[in-house]
Image 1 (cartoon, one colour):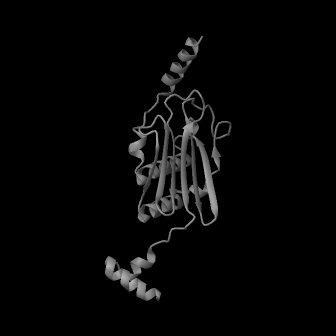
Image 2 (spheres, one colour; image 1 turned 90 degrees about the horizontal axis):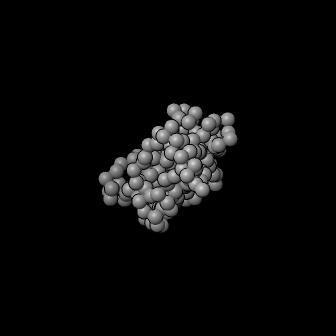
Image 3 (cartoon, rainbow, N blue to C red; image 1 turned 90 degrees about the vertical axis):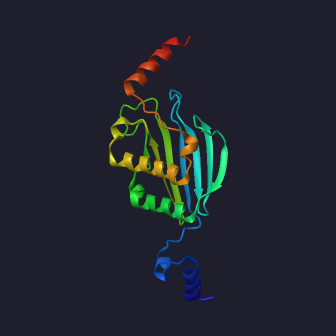
Length: 190
């Protein structure tokens, strides 16, 4: 069948114009988006631990491990539109210009908090892979563009896939209260 014939059939079935149909970006068949959140150290109380994988065909695999609402593996599908939305979020965010890591010991992570999580965000598409590891307890990164990009991508993956209901609400920590509580706990250990 010719391309024009297929576009005309789709036009009549969907009500879209042929121009709108041609503007739909194809999803690379090898596309995979990964978000992994885990405690960065043993001093991280109540740090969530979960993984989510989003595949080109819309398959999503959520693995809730610790301190999340669902501690199980859940498989489900999202629409091609949502997969495209996630892919375009990566493209538009500046993710591909980020360093590969923002971690403890790096010049970008001075005086890290002990309750931070290690967050790894990765995207594979068209034969290339970009991965960024980020320690969320780097106070000097707060407010910087890099941290905003990473936090926004994490949030978009959670919201667009719908897994936020299995993660649960976020808890805000007070840096001084957390350090004080951790010191008191270490004194009480025999």
